[in-house]
Image 1 (cartoon, helix red, strand yellow):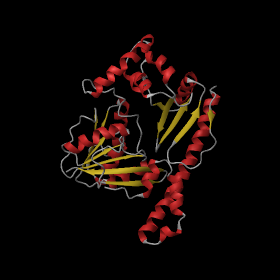
Image 2 (cartoon, rainbow, N blue to C red):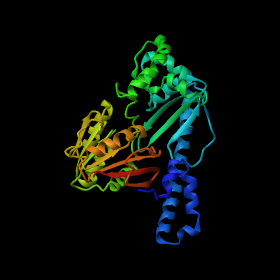
Image 3 (cartoon, rainbow, N blue to C red):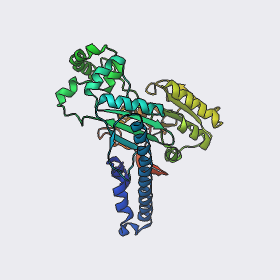
Image 4 (cartoon, rainbow, N blue to C red):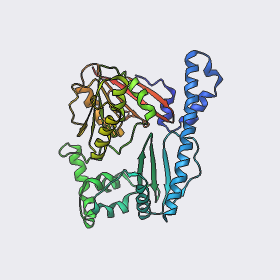
Amino acid sequence: MPVTDPLIDAIHQGRLYDAARAIAGDPASAVAERERAERERAERAVDVCEQIGRVCEEWRSEVLERLRAGGCEVASDEIAGPRQRHTIELAVADFDTARRAASLLQRDGFEPWQSWSRGAERSASRFARELVLGTTSDATMVVRLRWGGPPTRSRMQRVFTPTAGDWRMVDLPGALWPAYSLVRPGRLVLERLGLRPRHDDSLGPFLSTPDQLVRPLLEFGGIGPDDRVLDIGCGDGRIVVAAAEHSGCRTIGIERSDDLVERARRRAVDHGVADLVDIVQGDGRTIDVDEATLVVMFLSIGVVAELVPSLLGRLRPGARLVIHEQSPLPSSMQPPPDESVALIGDGAVTVAHRWTAR
């Protein structure tokens, strides 16, 4: 289905604010009722981007103060103004400074998105160019600690260069990591041929769906009281709990993290829907989906591209699959969504996609 929502491309290209201002300020766009509604959405998108910009600036000031008080020298660009993502970028001198800054932020509730074995730190200190941390409340605030500028490597060099997935999954003493670079191409070939499982970069770090977008997302999926909702990578359970509260339907959330499973179960109890919500610890890529009529996912684009075709082949006819993201889906992804829409919430934006199993 062709994309008709003019704000979708704007979100994917990271220029929602400018595009929305152009639509909102165009008198010709208010001729017909549809165009008037489009202009009102654009005006709302402008307000939301400005709101996100203010929130990011507040966080940036607090983070800078915390790091500098802890003895970490960091630099930050001037106020970036309106934006569509809750992200702060800070420049640090080197890997060691980034590690110190990350340690300070963890004391304030930030969680690192990268993790690696102890022996891998030597390799990471050589090849990594950023550390990323996030904290989740109503929305996720992301801090990117960057140093050294973007790497300039040829395609062949990238084949031999370890990445975050290698550092997390391969447990080697630090002295052996240079040798690992020599065997890495062979591992990639075996993975491509399906002769060994891919390095699991995980289903991605925990990114919460902003509370303001949960109900619009469920309504976009056509939720009803007779649905069986499945959230793959349910995180803290906010979507399955909201689905049970909103429609009284039965829901299942699947999550691998021990901590998040506990948080999701506690949320269901606190909201009084524990009898309707089942939180299962496991891998969403292997779960039985026979009973699900509405499946929701908020995962990395790479994982989504892998899971969507598989899920559509296993879901019962008429079941809906809904995802949301701010990055474009791969052009090679098949089948394309049946419908896509830009969701503009109070202080958060996303693009939602829906498929119906046939």
